[in-house]
Length: 358
Image (cartoon, rainbow, N blue to C red):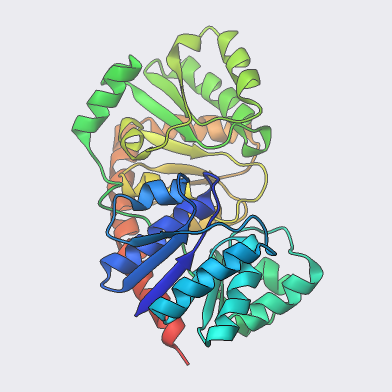
C-alpha cells in the first residue's frame, strides 16, 4: 500500500514519537511511505535516519490555506491509498483534502480530553478509520457518544531493534553518570510534573534506599516541577545516589542503564509509551494501575501494577524488584512480550488489516 503521513507538530510528544515509529514500521514492512512535516522538528530529525520520503509542510492551525495547498499538491501527485494524521490541527484539512481527491483518511487520537463538540461528533464519522491508542482511550470516546464501530484500537509500535538490551551500553552510560556497574538503578523518564507522580516516587525510593544501599535513581526529563524535585533531593542524606540527566533526545541507550523503570502517574495516561520502550530493552516496569498503563505490560510477568500515590506499595515494589531472582526473569519476559505484541512488524500488520477490512 501507499501512505502519505501528515504531521507538522514541532513538539517532542508521545504522539510525535508514535507518528515517526508507525511511518517507519510501514516502510519496513514493504509499503511505500511519504511524510509531510515541518523542517527541524522531532519528526523530521527522526525520519532523517530512515528511507521514508519527507516533504516540507506546515499547518499553523486548521485554517492555514498554505498548508492545505501544499498537502493537496503532494497528495494529488503521489496518489496514496491512505492519508494518515496524528494531530488535531490537521484533522479537518485531511478530511477536506481526502474528500476532494477521493483518498480515504485514517486519524489517530492520542488525548482523552474531548474535542470541540462538532469535531467530536463529525470526525470519527467522516474519517474512514478513526483510531484510539488503547482500550482505555477507546472507552472514553464511546462514553462521549462515538459509535463503537467507528473507533478502532492500534497500540503504539516499538522499534525492538533500536530498543534492546545492551550490556556494553549500560556500562558506558553508568560510567558517564558516575554510577558503579553493580548498582541497581531505578529510572524515571518523562515530564517533571507532580501529576506524573514524581514526588511519590521520590518518597518511595528514599524509603527503599534506607534498606537497599545499592539502589540509585536516574531522573530523565524536564518540566515545571524539576527544580522542586531537585531541591527535595538535595536535602536528603541519599542525595549522592540520584542523577539528573535532563531531557534526552535519544533515550534508547539510557534504558540499558536502568534496572527498572517507574511510571508512577497519579492522573490517567492515554497509553504509556515509555513502558513498552523499557520492556523492549529488557527492563521490568513499575506502573500505576490507572488509565491505559495496564495495557502496556503483563502484570506479575513483565512488571508490576501499583496503586497510584501509595508510597509504601511503591517502596515494597522497588525493593522486590531489586532482587535479581525476581528482576532478571521479568526483564527477559518483557523483551519477549514486546516482540510478540508491540513490535513494528506486528503493529504494521494489524494496521493494514484494519484499513483493508471492509
